[in-house]
Amino acid sequence: MPPAPSLTFASLKQSLAKRQFAPVYLLHGEEAYYIDELVKVFENILPESERDFNLYTIYAPETTADAIAETCTRFPMMSDYQVVIVKEAQSKKDVLTKLADYAANPSKTTILAICSRGETVKAATLTSAIKKSGGVIFESPKVNDRNIAGLIVSLAKDAGLNIEEKGVAMLTEFIGANLAKLHNEISKMATLLPAGATITPESIEQNIGISKDYNTFELIDAIAAKNSLKVYTMIEYFRRTKVSSLAMTPMIFNYFANLLILHFTKDKSPGSLMAALGLKWQSQLKNYETGARNYNAYKVIEIISALREFDTRSKGIGSRQPEYDLFHDLMFRILNAPGDISF
Image 1 (cartoon, rainbow, N blue to C red):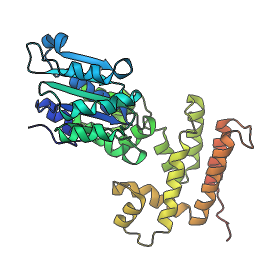
Image 2: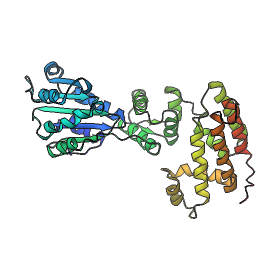
Image 3: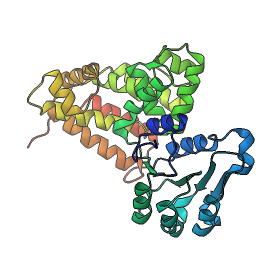
Image 4: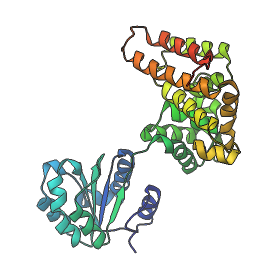
Protein backbone atom coordinates (compact mmCIF):
# COMPACT_ATOMS: atom_id res chain seq x y z
CA MET A 1 0.00 0.00 0.00
CA PRO A 2 1.25 3.53 -0.74
CA PRO A 3 1.79 5.94 2.14
CA ALA A 4 -0.93 8.31 3.22
CA PRO A 5 -1.36 11.49 1.13
CA SER A 6 -0.19 13.73 3.98
CA LEU A 7 2.72 12.71 6.21
CA THR A 8 5.14 14.23 8.67
CA PHE A 9 8.83 14.30 7.84
CA ALA A 10 9.53 11.36 10.17
CA SER A 11 6.59 9.32 8.89
CA LEU A 12 7.51 9.93 5.27
CA LYS A 13 11.11 8.84 5.87
CA GLN A 14 9.82 5.74 7.63
CA SER A 15 7.46 4.79 4.79
CA LEU A 16 10.27 5.21 2.23
CA ALA A 17 12.58 3.09 4.38
CA LYS A 18 9.90 0.38 4.32
CA ARG A 19 9.80 0.75 0.51
CA GLN A 20 6.16 1.81 0.55
CA PHE A 21 6.37 3.95 -2.56
CA ALA A 22 3.85 6.28 -4.15
CA PRO A 23 4.09 7.13 -7.87
CA VAL A 24 4.45 10.90 -7.34
CA TYR A 25 5.74 13.00 -4.45
CA LEU A 26 5.47 16.77 -4.15
CA LEU A 27 7.96 18.12 -1.60
CA HIS A 28 7.36 21.81 -1.07
CA GLY A 29 7.42 24.54 1.56
CA GLU A 30 9.48 27.31 3.13
CA GLU A 31 11.79 25.11 5.22
CA ALA A 32 14.44 23.79 2.82
CA TYR A 33 16.13 21.45 5.33
CA TYR A 34 13.43 18.76 5.31
CA ILE A 35 13.24 18.80 1.52
CA ASP A 36 17.02 18.46 1.19
CA GLU A 37 17.01 15.51 3.59
CA LEU A 38 14.20 13.77 1.72
CA VAL A 39 15.99 14.25 -1.61
CA LYS A 40 18.92 12.31 -0.15
CA VAL A 41 16.52 9.47 0.68
CA PHE A 42 15.13 9.42 -2.86
CA GLU A 43 18.65 9.42 -4.29
CA ASN A 44 19.38 6.25 -2.33
CA ILE A 45 16.21 4.27 -3.04
CA LEU A 46 17.95 2.32 -5.78
CA PRO A 47 21.02 0.16 -5.18
CA GLU A 48 24.18 1.83 -6.44
CA SER A 49 24.46 -0.69 -9.28
CA GLU A 50 21.09 0.47 -10.70
CA ARG A 51 21.50 4.23 -10.43
CA ASP A 52 23.41 4.87 -13.66
CA PHE A 53 20.43 3.81 -15.78
CA ASN A 54 17.46 4.41 -13.47
CA LEU A 55 18.15 7.56 -11.43
CA TYR A 56 17.45 10.89 -13.11
CA THR A 57 18.05 14.31 -11.56
CA ILE A 58 16.35 17.02 -13.60
CA TYR A 59 16.49 20.78 -12.99
CA ALA A 60 13.15 22.43 -13.82
CA PRO A 61 14.62 25.66 -15.26
CA GLU A 62 16.52 23.61 -17.84
CA THR A 63 13.67 21.48 -19.16
CA THR A 64 9.98 21.27 -19.98
CA ALA A 65 7.02 19.41 -18.52
CA ASP A 66 6.82 17.26 -21.67
CA ALA A 67 10.48 16.23 -21.30
CA ILE A 68 9.94 15.30 -17.65
CA ALA A 69 6.83 13.28 -18.52
CA GLU A 70 8.68 11.52 -21.33
CA THR A 71 11.44 10.51 -18.90
CA CYS A 72 8.88 9.26 -16.38
CA THR A 73 7.13 7.04 -18.93
CA ARG A 74 10.29 5.10 -19.77
CA PHE A 75 10.66 1.59 -18.44
CA PRO A 76 13.37 0.92 -15.85
CA MET A 77 16.38 -1.07 -16.98
CA MET A 78 16.95 -4.27 -14.98
CA SER A 79 15.15 -2.76 -11.99
CA ASP A 80 11.67 -2.62 -10.51
CA TYR A 81 11.69 1.17 -10.44
CA GLN A 82 13.27 4.25 -11.90
CA VAL A 83 13.55 7.38 -9.75
CA VAL A 84 13.09 10.85 -11.26
CA ILE A 85 13.91 13.86 -9.06
CA VAL A 86 12.87 17.30 -10.31
CA LYS A 87 14.76 20.05 -8.49
CA GLU A 88 14.17 23.84 -8.35
CA ALA A 89 10.55 23.40 -9.37
CA GLN A 90 9.67 26.64 -7.58
CA SER A 91 11.43 28.62 -10.32
CA LYS A 92 9.37 27.14 -13.17
CA LYS A 93 5.69 27.40 -12.28
CA ASP A 94 4.50 26.60 -15.80
CA VAL A 95 6.26 23.22 -15.54
CA LEU A 96 4.41 22.49 -12.32
CA THR A 97 1.04 23.28 -13.87
CA LYS A 98 1.69 21.19 -16.99
CA LEU A 99 2.90 18.19 -14.96
CA ALA A 100 -0.67 17.72 -13.75
CA ASP A 101 -1.49 15.58 -16.80
CA TYR A 102 1.30 13.11 -15.97
CA ALA A 103 0.53 13.20 -12.23
CA ALA A 104 -3.09 12.23 -12.96
CA ASN A 105 -1.98 9.04 -14.70
CA PRO A 106 1.56 8.23 -13.53
CA SER A 107 3.68 5.24 -14.46
CA LYS A 108 3.60 2.43 -11.91
CA THR A 109 7.32 1.76 -12.36
CA THR A 110 8.46 5.37 -11.80
CA ILE A 111 8.93 7.23 -8.52
CA LEU A 112 8.72 10.95 -9.31
CA ALA A 113 9.78 13.48 -6.66
CA ILE A 114 9.00 17.12 -7.47
CA CYS A 115 10.91 19.51 -5.20
CA SER A 116 9.85 23.11 -4.62
CA ARG A 117 12.53 24.23 -2.19
CA GLY A 118 11.65 27.27 -0.08
CA GLU A 119 8.25 27.90 -1.62
CA THR A 120 4.77 26.41 -1.35
CA VAL A 121 3.27 25.20 -4.63
CA LYS A 122 0.02 26.97 -5.54
CA ALA A 123 -0.77 24.92 -8.66
CA ALA A 124 -4.14 23.44 -7.65
CA THR A 125 -4.38 21.29 -10.79
CA LEU A 126 -1.10 19.55 -9.90
CA THR A 127 -1.88 19.00 -6.21
CA SER A 128 -5.36 17.71 -7.07
CA ALA A 129 -3.97 15.28 -9.66
CA ILE A 130 -1.35 13.97 -7.22
CA LYS A 131 -3.95 13.29 -4.55
CA LYS A 132 -6.30 11.52 -6.95
CA SER A 133 -3.58 9.21 -8.27
CA GLY A 134 -2.44 8.14 -4.78
CA GLY A 135 0.56 10.42 -4.66
CA VAL A 136 2.01 12.17 -1.61
CA ILE A 137 2.18 15.87 -0.83
CA PHE A 138 4.62 16.84 1.88
CA GLU A 139 4.70 20.48 2.98
CA SER A 140 7.81 21.57 4.86
CA PRO A 141 6.66 24.40 7.15
CA LYS A 142 8.93 27.18 8.32
CA VAL A 143 10.10 26.66 11.89
CA ASN A 144 9.13 29.58 14.13
CA ASP A 145 10.49 30.73 17.46
CA ARG A 146 7.72 29.05 19.45
CA ASN A 147 8.45 25.51 18.26
CA ILE A 148 12.26 25.51 18.09
CA ALA A 149 12.57 24.12 21.64
CA GLY A 150 10.27 21.19 20.92
CA LEU A 151 12.10 20.52 17.68
CA ILE A 152 15.47 20.37 19.47
CA VAL A 153 14.07 17.86 21.97
CA SER A 154 12.73 15.81 19.04
CA LEU A 155 16.06 15.89 17.18
CA ALA A 156 17.88 14.77 20.31
CA LYS A 157 15.37 11.94 20.81
CA ASP A 158 15.79 10.84 17.18
CA ALA A 159 19.55 10.72 17.81
CA GLY A 160 19.01 8.47 20.84
CA LEU A 161 19.74 11.21 23.38
CA ASN A 162 17.98 13.31 26.01
CA ILE A 163 18.69 17.00 26.55
CA GLU A 164 18.46 19.25 29.60
CA GLU A 165 16.17 22.27 29.55
CA LYS A 166 19.08 24.69 29.77
CA GLY A 167 20.80 22.88 26.93
CA VAL A 168 17.68 23.42 24.81
CA ALA A 169 17.78 27.13 25.66
CA MET A 170 21.47 27.41 24.74
CA LEU A 171 20.98 25.78 21.33
CA THR A 172 17.84 27.84 20.72
CA GLU A 173 19.70 31.06 21.40
CA PHE A 174 22.93 30.39 19.52
CA ILE A 175 21.66 28.32 16.60
CA GLY A 176 17.98 29.18 16.39
CA ALA A 177 15.92 27.81 13.52
CA ASN A 178 18.91 26.75 11.39
CA LEU A 179 17.79 23.13 11.13
CA ALA A 180 20.81 21.97 9.17
CA LYS A 181 23.17 23.29 11.86
CA LEU A 182 20.99 21.98 14.70
CA HIS A 183 20.94 18.55 13.10
CA ASN A 184 24.71 18.58 12.53
CA GLU A 185 25.51 19.63 16.10
CA ILE A 186 23.14 17.10 17.67
CA SER A 187 24.45 14.37 15.36
CA LYS A 188 27.97 15.27 16.48
CA MET A 189 26.89 14.93 20.11
CA ALA A 190 25.40 11.51 19.31
CA THR A 191 28.81 10.30 18.11
CA LEU A 192 30.54 11.63 21.23
CA LEU A 193 28.05 10.55 23.91
CA PRO A 194 26.83 7.03 24.71
CA ALA A 195 23.34 6.00 23.59
CA GLY A 196 20.66 7.29 25.93
CA ALA A 197 22.94 9.94 27.45
CA THR A 198 21.73 13.44 28.28
CA ILE A 199 23.05 16.52 26.51
CA THR A 200 24.03 18.91 29.29
CA PRO A 201 25.19 22.55 29.20
CA GLU A 202 28.67 21.26 30.03
CA SER A 203 28.73 18.86 27.07
CA ILE A 204 27.48 21.63 24.77
CA GLU A 205 30.24 23.94 25.97
CA GLN A 206 32.92 21.25 25.52
CA ASN A 207 31.81 19.96 22.14
CA ILE A 208 30.00 22.83 20.42
CA GLY A 209 31.80 25.78 21.96
CA ILE A 210 28.80 27.63 23.44
CA SER A 211 29.57 29.02 26.90
CA LYS A 212 27.32 27.63 29.63
CA ASP A 213 28.02 30.63 31.87
CA TYR A 214 27.94 33.55 29.43
CA ASN A 215 24.77 33.50 27.37
CA THR A 216 21.41 35.24 27.26
CA PHE A 217 19.81 32.50 29.36
CA GLU A 218 22.24 33.24 32.22
CA LEU A 219 22.02 37.00 31.66
CA ILE A 220 18.24 36.96 32.06
CA ASP A 221 18.59 34.94 35.27
CA ALA A 222 21.04 37.56 36.59
CA ILE A 223 18.73 40.41 35.58
CA ALA A 224 15.75 38.67 37.22
CA ALA A 225 17.70 38.32 40.46
CA LYS A 226 19.02 41.91 40.18
CA ASN A 227 22.57 40.54 40.43
CA SER A 228 24.30 43.69 39.19
CA LEU A 229 27.84 42.33 39.54
CA LYS A 230 27.07 39.30 37.38
CA VAL A 231 25.19 41.37 34.80
CA TYR A 232 28.06 43.85 34.30
CA THR A 233 30.66 41.05 34.33
CA MET A 234 28.75 39.33 31.53
CA ILE A 235 28.48 42.56 29.53
CA GLU A 236 32.26 42.94 29.59
CA TYR A 237 32.67 39.31 28.51
CA PHE A 238 30.30 39.92 25.59
CA ARG A 239 32.26 43.06 24.68
CA ARG A 240 35.61 41.20 24.72
CA THR A 241 34.33 38.20 22.77
CA LYS A 242 32.23 40.33 20.39
CA VAL A 243 28.99 38.50 21.15
CA SER A 244 26.22 40.60 19.60
CA SER A 245 24.08 42.34 22.20
CA LEU A 246 21.52 43.00 19.46
CA ALA A 247 20.90 39.25 19.24
CA MET A 248 20.17 39.11 22.98
CA THR A 249 17.60 41.88 23.24
CA PRO A 250 14.65 40.00 21.68
CA MET A 251 14.88 37.33 24.41
CA ILE A 252 15.21 40.00 27.10
CA PHE A 253 12.20 41.83 25.63
CA ASN A 254 10.19 38.58 25.57
CA TYR A 255 11.11 37.94 29.21
CA PHE A 256 9.76 41.30 30.38
CA ALA A 257 6.71 41.06 28.10
CA ASN A 258 5.93 37.73 29.77
CA LEU A 259 6.62 39.24 33.17
CA LEU A 260 3.97 41.87 32.46
CA ILE A 261 1.52 39.09 31.52
CA LEU A 262 2.35 37.34 34.80
CA HIS A 263 1.59 40.49 36.81
CA PHE A 264 -1.85 40.82 35.20
CA THR A 265 -2.78 37.13 35.27
CA LYS A 266 -5.31 36.74 38.06
CA ASP A 267 -4.83 33.01 38.59
CA LYS A 268 -1.26 32.66 39.84
CA SER A 269 -1.30 28.85 40.01
CA PRO A 270 1.59 27.17 38.17
CA GLY A 271 -0.66 25.62 35.54
CA SER A 272 -2.42 28.89 34.79
CA LEU A 273 0.83 30.85 34.58
CA MET A 274 2.45 28.24 32.33
CA ALA A 275 -0.52 28.43 29.97
CA ALA A 276 -0.53 32.23 29.98
CA LEU A 277 3.22 32.42 29.29
CA GLY A 278 3.37 29.50 26.86
CA LEU A 279 5.93 27.60 28.94
CA LYS A 280 6.67 23.88 28.55
CA TRP A 281 8.26 23.16 31.95
CA GLN A 282 7.21 24.31 35.41
CA SER A 283 10.87 24.96 36.27
CA GLN A 284 10.79 27.82 33.75
CA LEU A 285 8.52 29.72 36.13
CA LYS A 286 11.33 30.13 38.64
CA ASN A 287 13.05 33.13 37.10
CA TYR A 288 9.67 34.74 36.33
CA GLU A 289 8.69 34.43 39.98
CA THR A 290 12.08 35.90 40.94
CA GLY A 291 11.62 38.73 38.46
CA ALA A 292 8.10 39.45 39.67
CA ARG A 293 9.45 40.02 43.19
CA ASN A 294 12.11 42.46 41.93
CA TYR A 295 10.18 44.26 39.19
CA ASN A 296 6.61 45.36 39.77
CA ALA A 297 4.29 46.08 36.83
CA TYR A 298 5.27 49.78 36.76
CA LYS A 299 8.97 48.90 36.54
CA VAL A 300 8.30 46.36 33.80
CA ILE A 301 6.42 48.93 31.70
CA GLU A 302 9.34 51.33 32.12
CA ILE A 303 11.83 48.60 31.16
CA ILE A 304 9.89 47.67 28.02
CA SER A 305 10.02 51.34 27.03
CA ALA A 306 13.81 51.34 27.62
CA LEU A 307 14.18 48.22 25.45
CA ARG A 308 12.24 49.88 22.62
CA GLU A 309 14.44 52.96 22.93
CA PHE A 310 17.57 50.77 22.83
CA ASP A 311 16.34 49.13 19.64
CA THR A 312 15.86 52.52 18.01
CA ARG A 313 19.19 53.94 19.19
CA SER A 314 21.11 50.78 18.20
CA LYS A 315 19.97 51.44 14.61
CA GLY A 316 21.66 54.86 14.73
CA ILE A 317 18.48 56.83 15.27
CA GLY A 318 19.18 59.60 17.80
CA SER A 319 22.48 58.11 18.96
CA ARG A 320 26.03 57.44 17.75
CA GLN A 321 27.14 55.48 20.82
CA PRO A 322 28.88 52.10 20.29
CA GLU A 323 26.67 49.03 20.63
CA TYR A 324 28.12 47.81 23.94
CA ASP A 325 27.92 51.27 25.54
CA LEU A 326 24.24 51.39 24.63
CA PHE A 327 23.79 47.88 26.03
CA HIS A 328 25.55 48.83 29.27
CA ASP A 329 23.22 51.82 29.58
CA LEU A 330 20.22 49.57 28.93
CA MET A 331 21.26 47.18 31.69
CA PHE A 332 21.65 50.13 34.10
CA ARG A 333 18.16 51.36 33.27
CA ILE A 334 16.71 47.86 33.76
CA LEU A 335 18.43 47.22 37.08
CA ASN A 336 17.56 50.69 38.40
CA ALA A 337 14.08 51.22 36.99
CA PRO A 338 12.27 53.37 39.58
CA GLY A 339 8.81 52.21 38.60
CA ASP A 340 7.35 55.67 39.06
CA ILE A 341 5.17 55.66 35.93
CA SER A 342 1.93 57.50 36.61
CA PHE A 343 -1.31 57.11 34.68
